[in-house]
Amino acid sequence: MPTKYALIVEDDELKHESEKKIIEELGFEVVTCMDATTAIDQLRSGIDFSLVMVDKEILEKPQDKYPYEWVGASLILRIAREFPFTGHLVLFTHLSEPNVGDIRQVYMAGASALAAPPSTDRKTFVKALEMVTLGHQVLSPRFKQFGAQAVDPDMQCPLDTVEYYCVRLIAEHRGKEGASEKWGSGVSINNIDNLLDDIYLKMTEIVDGFSDLSNDKKSFELGKWYHDVAVKLYGAAFPVNYEPRSRRRKKKSDFDDLHSVLPA
Image (tube, rainbow, N blue to C red):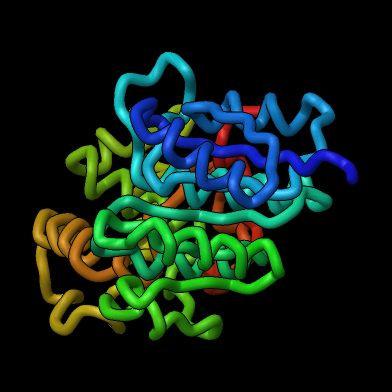
């Protein structure tokens, strides 16, 4: 019988061994790594992985000190796009409250979303993994309790991917200057201003009284909307290349065409 290989991407070394034992119980030869870049290298090595399990919060690169919330979901999306013949893809989390937006994104990529919070017992976790290896998409009751069952494939962010990432940068880096500096690659404050023209127009339909606010208050409301509303519905905005209005496709963001999510 041919060997089945599984890849576990988990930045917590203490959890590697327990997770590895569970996957080995299902008959897999297990490879582990701690960051997204190394995971891509493993996939490029030629090993035919039948199962890839990715923690929601992992390191982006080996030299990173801290994991990021969006890296796990973005890695799943990249694998689905660049390694289409990889076996079952699973996004899992040790957190008790999942991010509905992240679950929606991995579902759209054709992956499974598996909750593994601390309250999940080993037997239940193994049974859920068995279901995944049979091709089922799995949400534990813990996920459903927090509203993940409300994921709707037709529910789309009102901003396109470039606009949505711009809002994230403004929210996290205190305004246009910080957003321009963080985005890099020659993205000027003037580019940010042009994006904000489109964003503000759309926000008038989302936030009551938005058009009457000063620019400083609009920036504050953008950040509040991003953190309090958008991330919970659509997931964290993933890094994308800047594109001017004339070249962007004017469509709602459904995360189908994410690019530059992780370094090649």
